[in-house]
Length: 157
Image (spheres, helix red, strand yellow):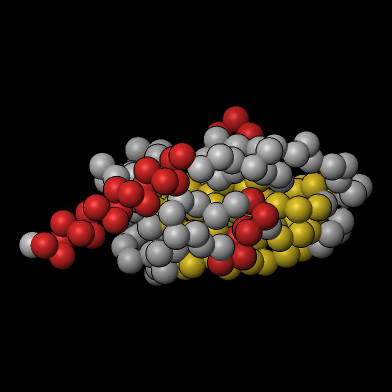
């Protein structure tokens, strides 16, 4: 019982400190190189096929990882045999990052408990993970060259 209490206190403290942290100043994205490419994202590690996989493709840090207004493209994909594949065509060359989560109850949001800890599995490009909250755009960032057809894999946990 005492150990549970200490874990709860640590979790609450970590959440409070994370909420107090200041975000880095937002830097305007630079010009992108000319051209487009194709991106195929395979998400693996789904424990069930219930619900859907929700993908979001961002071209810069604005709104990363969950503001729908700043997403370049989204994908809503059925899960089969523990995986889901989203394909994005005509992706502008340059940096990008992808987030994906298992929307088990199909309510279009990543569900979380009262502490804000996600209760549905999720993952990010470049295998980016952060202890308290989502990784930064730069941690999940990959690059796409003009004319490139890139395949990446994200493991949801």
